[in-house]
Length: 292
Image (cartoon, rainbow, N blue to C red; front, side, top):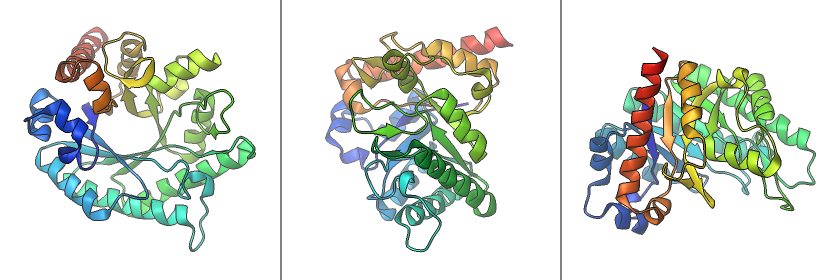
């Protein structure tokens, strides 16, 4: 199992990262602390050379990389996907998959791409957004099967829009996410904070079904404190229960502590980074002992 942390391109010059990590060489600090992976947000604006340099630095530090595209509100959102010449969404995702294939070769291990399904105005027929999500994810899986078998496509449990917001996000319930991954032939990313807030705000189940549990291929692990994506120190999200369920299902993929530097700083700085990782690693070991 790999345990990772969210890491932005340009982290070494980013003021919040510098404030949080001070004089530490960040990648070496991660590795020495016990992290073995990083997940990097990317988008249509991400430059190839910037990503390539980022990948090189992470690989040289011995950290495995996954990618997390953010396309909501752009023409590259899965809501606009179609397989035809000139389609902006198709062009972007083909380029992204090719970059992921290069990363797999560079790090000599699989690269996960964690996609958000489609989002769009609440006035759009939800079935259209669902079908386009499935079309993109199915095409991505097929592309990887032909061209890059070490690239693994997953779809994330989304954060449901706020009440009254002119927005809908496909895959913001467990049932719909299961339909997406089943029809697309891929696996799911279980985002613990999204699960918590969806259950609290919309009275949907907090825990996934046994069927979906078996389809989890990637995890975003974080707590909440007023907002989402917080260090594992508040005991609001039942993340220990979630991790235990995964280990009971023999989950052995990557768990990303998806917390930005601003949230670590608000929680006390480096101590909250260290405490989050230690809590997660200790709990994984306890669960393994209980299971085996």
